[in-house]
Image (cartoon, rainbow, N blue to C red; front, side):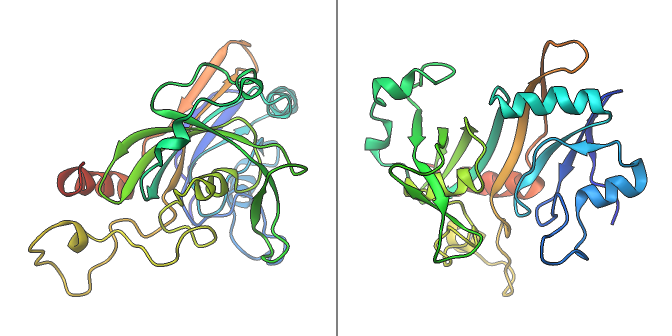
Length: 261
């Protein structure tokens, strides 16, 4: 498999548009599984290093550095939680009105900006789910502190299109937080309902398409869209973005046409 498309590149940084289903790093149990960094190291050398990870099922932006100085500088920003990240997701269900209640005053002190009328804060600790290996679950206290700002972009009859800004970087954070809010991500094999699909025949009255119809989007509907850092050379704020995958665009096109509310 070729290296995924390069979104941005300069002398110190390179960012890839990772497809859904591709691991970022070698699998701990099956070292033979293809992964993005293995491909990168084979073709670009081991000086290229990833400074963060995204789930295999999640598509989108993966940022790497090209030398040790840049790696230390950018990694330090992740450790100090000053990196901004934006994800987009298509979720099952509609947000409950109570989600938009103002957060407690002690929660607002750490927010990068006041919440708008379309945003809500998910402030829920995460721990490993002892009953399900490799999964996480929420807990009120004594877990790993986790915060996600969710912005509702569009509402449809049974689905919601959201933008998520994780303020922390926990495993499966966005997926678990959205499930906790009653908005599991479409096609999530761990935290979804395991039943709902998004089919054109469900949206369009009088559908006369193929008998072997396929879902409009058949993978986890979560995409890493942007990352905001300070550039390792200029030290100035720097943003890298990537567009939504074609599957997202197709799904949103038909939701807007046949399921708008």
